[in-house]
Length: 300
Ligand SMILES: Nc1ncnc2c1ncn2[C@@H]1O[C@H](COP(=O)(O)OP(=O)(O)OP(=O)(O)O)[C@@H](O)[C@H]1O
Ligand SMILES: [Mg+2]
Image 1 (cartoon, rainbow, N blue to C red):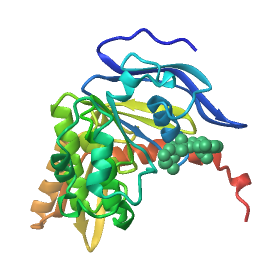
Image 2 (tube, protein in one colour):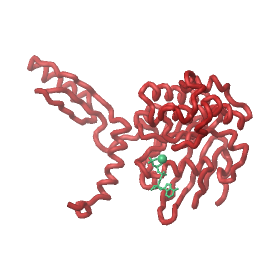
Image 3 (cartoon, protein in one colour):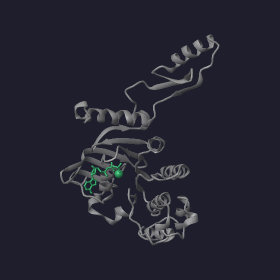
Image 4 (cartoon, helix red, strand yellow):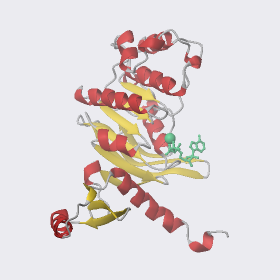
């Protein structure tokens, strides 16, 4: 396995990455790049290979084949300089259950040459009222906030966030989004996995959708368009929702509203929507699933 040449504008480069666990081939040859200063989202169903990929990039797992470069380093070589420039939120975090929030954050800060201020980091994730609480006494969402604090306290230039907001209440998710946006403003690079597609749409400059160990689509969220029509016009009529898909909402709206006005009616709850990333994601991943589950394979 050759180390890729370091290219300054790329924080991460992955070429034909493969990972097998015994007979299970979890990652089957994926390639992508993350530019410096970019927020990149890795999306995909459970078991797609996201955590495997992220943990290889973090240096927690060894790859079976392919080339990987993280800030110009091979993460498998566990270079201290690389570790000090990277922050990590693992999908399942192993922290010290008996340490308090402040002790945990101070401990991680001590590994970094220029850490952030500890109380400020705790406040950033909204745990300022829980500094003296032991980690094992935190709620699920509070533990996840602690994970985020531990990833940020070293003030790293590259941050890996594997499902960072799972278990967050809606307000905490929005707060975490603003933390991630702040990282973006500071020109940090973020590799994020999430099952919340609104989160990816909101935060990611580019996403890759991974399924069964392969990338099936990638690009900026707004450019991932489904094959179906690109606008959906909806309104209520006789107590039911009418939905019409169209490429030309101007013409359609003109016709619908003229006809309604001629009848002396209003189009109730009229909306025009672009497909969301979630629509695209479901369309792409469902296509593959419906191909995999043939009628003959369904046991009745
Ligand atoms: N340590 C391991 N040993 C054996 N198989 C593993 C191991 N870790 C992951 N796998 C398998 O590899 C595949 C990919 O798992 P991975 O955790 O990368 O998926 P994921 O995309 O992160 O899923 P999720 O959305 O559920 O977190 C799965 O089939 C999983 O069962
Ligand atoms: Mg995972």
